[in-house]
Amino acid sequence: MICLVLLIILASCSNVTDSSTKEVSAEYENVQELNNLPVPSTAIEIDEKSARDLKNYKIPQSFENFSASYQEKLKGEGWEITEVESNKVISVEKNNIKYLLIITKSSDTQTTNVTVRENF
Image 1 (spheres, rainbow, N blue to C red):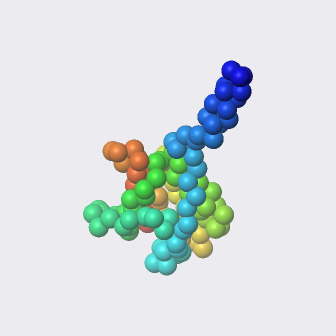
Image 2: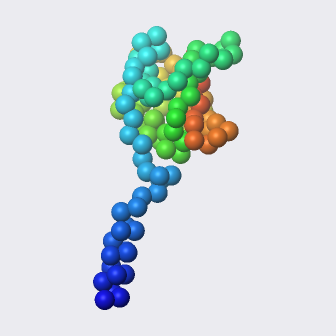
């Protein structure tokens, strides 16, 4: 009887997933004015930007869940990626158009900021 109860408890615990490690599947939209650069459909464009910035986005995903999957998406759409400064600053190029993507954690750690700049 005790073994049966323990088995039921173990089975129910195995169905619990840790949301911090769960991969978030995202749909993307291509931004035409950025040579069809894919951006998650959940991205929120932020008006605050420097004179060097083309676009600023806030992505409602943690940096850990977003960064690697975003780079895979870019590669899958034919973008060449070069790390400039770890995985937080990358250069992307497609059809001779280059952008610098600055991907950073926000202060709440549940949101990622992406800044797009021209890269000459």
